[in-house]
Image (cartoon, rainbow, N blue to C red; front, side, top):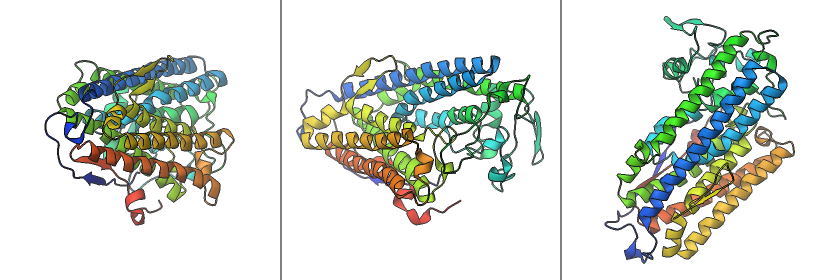
Length: 430
């Protein structure tokens, strides 16, 4: 499980009146309200692309279930990887927007105790956990479960069963029954390669009722279908939340323009620092633990990190490259910062570029046969240095984001932290 996160408070004087920062010498031709509106439009476009990609994934999964083969399995895996591209870019909208943050655990929660869902290799996974009675429940193999004096009827696997009865059952966060990573596990299976090259190797016959491996092939297909249908439903909800009268857009537009700009910088700083640099990257590097790899079954973590960082850059520049190839561009925080302090804007742009370059190094390493879980292996000094360079760059851009918050006088902005960065002595190996 992730370690408890800390909050770093930036207590700054709250600005009154117009958020065009006239007192700081801002060019009043930069319309701060338009920046906030465009930010909401970017969120709508990004989640819309995530929904389109999730629908394509669901179609590929239906094909796999109806005609299981190595080809249809690979097509479904490719669709999952493609679906991660827009979704990861959406995470910059998570922090600061409570509706998004409350919803996020339904679609992207990790790490997960995969034994809740399906069969596992008990020699590496184990058979039970003191913290989680559902650690090896194996819903796919057990239509009726009796655990801790409770009876759970899972005879019919539906999206409602996954979302209301199984996800985070018993209040255990690692009981992840829904979302991208549950689907990832069902497509790839466990990665049993440790810190050597190789992802999960689930065979297509795990879905072939006439030549079934792993047992319960029909129920496995039912679970995968329900999980992908639920992902589509959840993304439909979030797209609705960013429509003109949607809950997330309404929550944002109800804020003052100053607070709207603070929301933008909260998302940029918290994703870059506490979440991406800390919980998703530095923690795994410190522990040398492949279980702390974000896309651990597919070995796709390098791309997930790349697109998380890209989403932050999108928000600052007011740009987003859509999956149809079009470029969305509009009023940006970068333009506002440049009107106040051109050198500060230049420095943050350069740091955002540097973060993308550091992420690209990880991508190139994976393409050359050294993915994320190999890079964090003990003794892999060069691999660890690649990952640390990414962490360092994220930290640097966060410090500059804090300067932006101060320069624009955005008030008290909470940037989420991580023990792995703020209190390393508190981090203990599992």
